[in-house]
Image: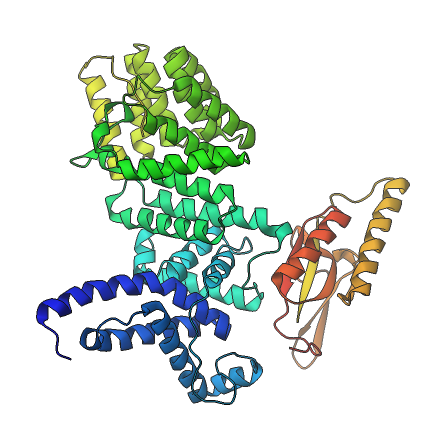
Length: 423
Length: 123
């Protein structure tokens, strides 16, 4: 069959997308079949190479993920037969499940959706250090290249490759199992998975270079919800991400940060808000609240308001109180204080913030919030000092630009009426 | 099936959580014996025990023509291994499950480490 140039170009984009979508599924299935992560990765990579050569000519098969898994499996068998180590492995794993009975023709094996669930629990095992959990998850389930994962965490490609090798070594040496944990271990283990996904999302925040991490985190959270529909915290995390992501377009204008107060609410993504709010409602219906559900509920209140002033602040503070009772961290107290300012005024908020100073002295948002309250109280010099400290500590350029701008305006004697919340 | 070392560390001779009164010692020993009994019955227990402190230690190393002997522990550190179990476990989760029970019984942190190879372990 001959195909036109245009058709082939359309295929190239589609093929790229199929690869990205099929990667985690294919690697997960191959790991189940072979018990070897590196072998699985290599086999899937080989299958993609074969697909890149054949699909533009033959067209994309009806079940691309299944095609990739079957081809990768055949490759893995070839590799195993060829290498001495492989023969050894092959013998060891008599019940390798690579072959159908009495035939050399491999059986058609479709991806089992549980494979990805098993793999994410392996990648996020608490016996691995958090930076290794994140790297493995993005590499094996997200299908990001080693270079892409490295770039996301400001680590060189060789350093990231080393990190991945170490993580895979520990999985192998310590025999970290490849399965969904038993009921008794599930709460702890799921918390670890959810915090990895949230860390991936937050790493992509306020930084255009790492924006793909946010969409990657949402894709993975969505997959997790599909795989574990009865876990309200998983849904809560997806809701939280969607509601936060819905405001992304409004958060910066021409590269400059725009506060929640000043955002153009017509640019918020309605479909994400609708989906996020539906998730929050169903979570309320289940009545098994947890940290992610409560944070999603807070975001839902913000997304519900047609103006900053119109926000149901008492509801926001109530939800923060609830959140603080479950997660009594200084960061939760900080966010609660910002909401308190809208009900009790900046003086009350400042008192709370000052009490958090010893815990959060190196956290830029504490100083940004202090600066905001001090400015509203008319204390220009103290406000300027607080914003200077915040700018000094800011993790991204976007944050820094915004905070430096606040310092400048205060120094130039601008009006002291501005207030608001870094969103 | 793999084998794992579950080890506890004493810090400068002091093992936090060590029973201080005879009554505490009695309940401590009861917890440990119940645990070891469970390990034995399930085929988990390979070997284990509590060690004397580093003061009782001797180091041997190859010298010129002969093995040289010195008094004291191998590493001059604040922490020394205080006791250990070697257990059989299918995978890390199983080993960590036993590790959790050990921590509950001895009220002291432990390290769980897989064996790379042993003389007798069956892969």
